Image 1 (cartoon, rainbow, N blue to C red):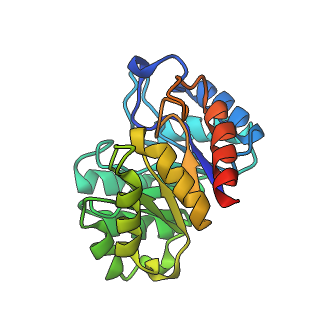
Image 2 (image 1 turned 30 degrees about the vertical axis):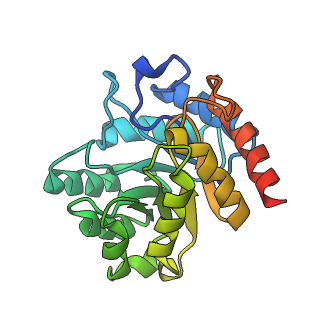
Length: 243
């Protein structure tokens, strides 16, 4: 499995290739899926470019993307989109009003209120991607969570942005996760660590992701022109690492 992460918290300052509007997200998702992505992760944005959890923002993005692709589509529940845990939980519960909620949503296990968010998503029938960030207590919290066995998968998220040390950080994170309560693991890095961690995922046979959320450049340092270009190169790197 190679998931495409379309935009993340990036905005217009990061370049015109970063999709922000529902139509741009849909076009980028369609191109990435055509290039081989089998899952989509997106941060729906307000008109001013801010991540948001409101159904009025998420709904149009999901509708536009699903009109173009036939793969699962997931969103974030990151605390930066709604810092107050009670308000964030209310937003997630309001997704029940959507014609069709996201297929899955990431929940950062080190954030306050993560367990409640995950439980609300499960109640809605939305798969939970348990985001376990390196450098946090997320792995320890997840290890004792009563919901751990019910999540869709674990996102092992390597926050070490150094190309020279990200692989070691990834291995340490995987050691902390252990068997991850029997759930599938998607391993990925970011910025300078994105490509080394993707290749490690290939060597280990783990699911991974790539896209403009995680990196703006190709392995040779050249700017990426699109999510599709990153997916094409990501699949090549992943397959080479598997050999």
